[in-house]
Image 1 (tube, rainbow, N blue to C red):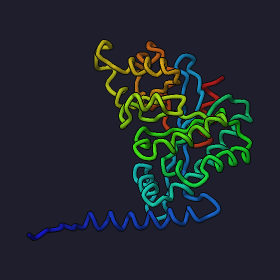
Image 2 (image 1 turned 90 degrees about the horizontal axis):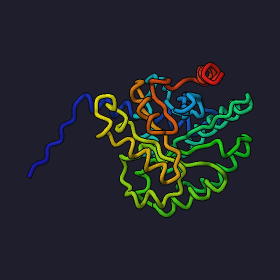
Image 3 (image 1 turned 90 degrees about the vertical axis):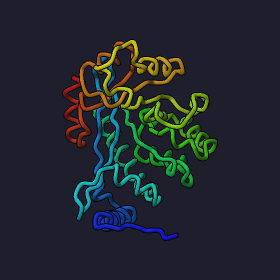
Length: 275
């Protein structure tokens, strides 16, 4: 039996690109600063009041040689190499400092930060987070950690225990991409969590189907029965927004409201929206 392996120029270029990216990410992880790390903030609105109540911190990487790199490319690489632990701390620090700045200006807003299983399971994660919150002087009740359902496929009990320790400090936890993960409803009920974020798959195309057959309203209702704050992501038009408002979804984010913004633009958007 002969096995053939095909190797072409595109594969070679991809391998070289990944090596360049990884070298720069290692440098970032080992440096005291965070040059090259770009953190933007997407506004999250209260669907009843149309006011900004939160921001989601979203990171990208500005490579010296490759230009701006999407999180879809560099986050999986960070997770595979466990560089997500030191670089995730840099993202957390920057997000908390911006939150503190907004709160100091008198804005009653919170911050959502994505956290991976590798970060949660890293040594003394809860202790380090609590220390960082104290160092920045930020109110823990203004912080939301976003986790995906898929992280509970491994080390479920340990992860749930760590989330419990964080929640005791006042931090809130929400399940991102709700409805597309691996968890059974029974498992979701057992989680130490405070909210769900409905995946955009349940928002896309709402304007094209009958309200009777759209199940998004049922997900909102389920979330409320479980006492969760319910957020919808990926809102792209007014019809989707009106549907979610009609069925009492709490919060929403998406390009209909705003793309992710730099700190300066986020502050400007907040000032104009929350007059």
